[in-house]
Structure formats: structure tokens, C-alpha cells
Length: 233
Image 1 (tube, rainbow, N blue to C red):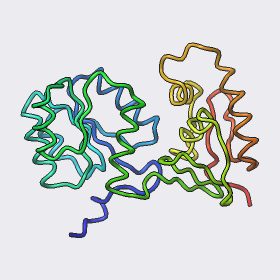
Image 2 (tube, rainbow, N blue to C red; image 1 turned 135 degrees about the vertical axis):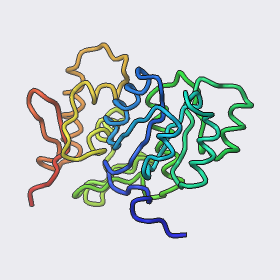
Image 3 (spheres, one colour; image 1 turned 180 degrees about the vertical axis):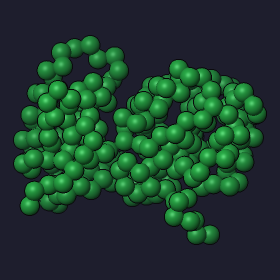
Image 4 (cartoon, helix red, strand yellow; image 1 turned 45 degrees about the horizontal axis):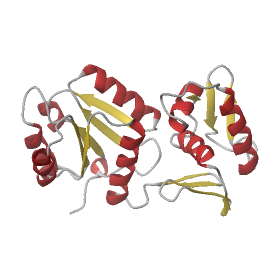
């Protein structure tokens, strides 16, 4: 069956649509914030009924404890009408809960509390299954393979440290969009980083030198950094 264009997974950075189905405002706000920083287009609803009537997301993060209906039933109905990747994110950690959700069509199951980096890794994993090329970002001379963590410039591989790659991944998720210093520190270190922010400048200098493309990473003074939306010829 051929899906309509609006129902196919996005294939460019910033076009992957994630629907957060979560009725806890605090948890929902954290998820939306983290996913938006990760370069995803995010919507959030708090009921099963709203989830079932909501467009064509590429990924659904589904809480099972919904106020209006059984989350497993929502999962089953979503699977019947959509090819979206479904990741259950819930406090229900019993084996029976996992089995019920997976049998209903969930692609993955994550028990709260969980780390945001783990959540982003799970999303990348399910996207690989539904769009094999979805983990490769190409921008001008730059190619970033999120699965293998390889970086190429004009076809030549560039060796980066793990932190340098994490910084580049944060920037490459949405070229042209400014990422604040806090956003990048949280992406490359974690939300609990309390060290000096100058460590970012050291890594950024090294990253720019290794990539060797003038103007690729821009400093937006007072705001942060971004990957240049267009590159000079």
C-alpha cells in the first residue's frame, strides 16, 4: 500500500513529526522541550481521543495512563490506521504491561523515569526501522551518519571525539536554527552539567578546525551557535 505524502515519515532534518501523548503537564513540557531541541517537529495532546484524531505523526510517544481511555487500546487503534513508530513511555513497568503494549503494536517500551538521551536514542532506533536512510544528515559538503557516528566532508571521513560528534549532531539536526549554549551542553554532556561553559568553546574550536569548512558553524553572539543554512560557494 502506498501512503499519501502526508503520512510518510519525514526524510529531512526538522521534518520528523513527533506526537507526545501525555496528560502530566510537567512531563509533557520536558518531553516537548527535549524533542524540539533535538530538531523534531513536536505536537502534544493529553487524551487518547486527541491522539487518534491527530494527523500523521512519524513517531508517537504514548503514555498508557490516559484520563479518557486505556492506552493499550489507543496503541492498537493507532497501529491499525498508521505506520507511525509507537514508543510507549509509561510508569507501568510490569512484564504484563510490556507484553500487552507490544502485542498491541508498540515498537518500543520505555519505563519512567528515563534519561532524555536514551529516549532520543530509542527514537532514532525506531526511525531506522521505518526509514533506513533517516539517520543520515546531508548538508552541503557535510554528511553526518547518526547510526555509525561517522562524519564526512566532501566524501572524506573526519575523525571526531565523542563530544565533538554530539555537538555536531545537535547543530545538524536543524541547520540554520540557533542552538543555545545550554542546549548544546545538555545534548553533549547532559542536563546535570554544572562545570564551566568554556569547555564548549574549546570543543567548538577543535570541531571547526577538524571540519575545515569556513563558515559552516556560525557563532550567533548572545544566543549560541548554528550550522549555516546556506554555504558560500
